[in-house]
Length: 92
Image: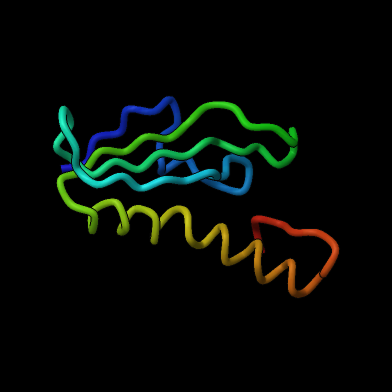
């Protein structure tokens, strides 16, 4: 089961709301769940605001969300960095 407790929802991650400074924590008391946290970076404003926090029963549930919503943003940024060299863009 996945529970989001941050003020940002992972489905809202996009080229204007990028999860950065990400950490994955193994289960620990009192939560007994895997936990992923990240700050929200807003490239156009050049600042961070808000945060993501996900609790899940398994690490695989969190990885699945990251694969769907976060990893594509970083792949686009890396592809554009390679293409343009001097700057990066979070969308194609």
